[in-house]
Image (cartoon, rainbow, N blue to C red; front, side):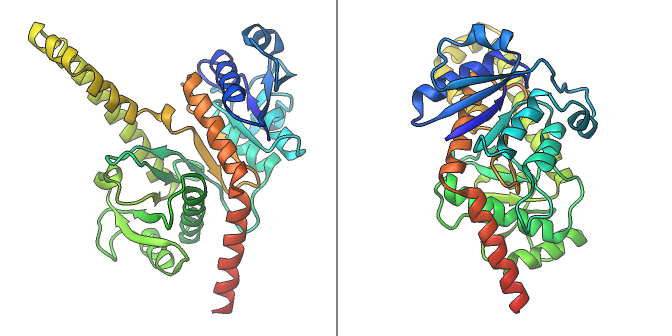
Length: 334
């Protein structure tokens, strides 16, 4: 198996990307990695070149670049060359912690969509109280969506969770303003009807306050609502730990309490840490494309690499395509 990785994307590139890649080739069997980026910056960080190669380029798409224009104009950018490796079948999957919009554009222009999927979905795995986690899609690939897009998201998420995370008959929920049937706007009402009839384990509407309760393994929504929900969860977690830190270090008594609870607090922090869950899969493309968090460290990159490997090994893309084709055939027959 061979993965292409944008070595220049993210806040801690190329150091974190190189370190994550080196750890991956050491721990994972039969894995090759090609790092795309400035060889003069990458090479000094490599302690081994075994199973790791470099495609040199000094062009980078930054967070300030307009995504579509940058992908079209900067054809030799590390992110674009990475996607092209997958397009030309020289790599099985690709990973970047860089510009999210540019990655989505490169994925569409170079990797291409799965037949039957109208719009890809950006899909991170988020923590739950029972430590199992859930997949939320879409979180920003498409701000607007139609009911049939949410149906496709549900199928893609269900296949991914079953194949990669090993959960049989994963529970699928629809993010909504109420748990009762018939709640929501026109989009969610129509999507609810489609999801009830789909070949998935649909468990109904899920309210935002229930996202971390573990009521569903997959939760679908439009990209606008999903992005708001994602950033609300991230912001709440960061604010909570900031408040706890201030409280525990306010006086000697609380400092002693913090020392006694140190291991428990670290465990909670790890449970909420995105680095444990890999990146956000761009589901619906004809090969696995993973968007790692912009602030990814070596551990997060390593998790994203494992995630990409699982998707390739378990034929997630092919299974999604077959499931969508079967669903469309069934609907036509009905």
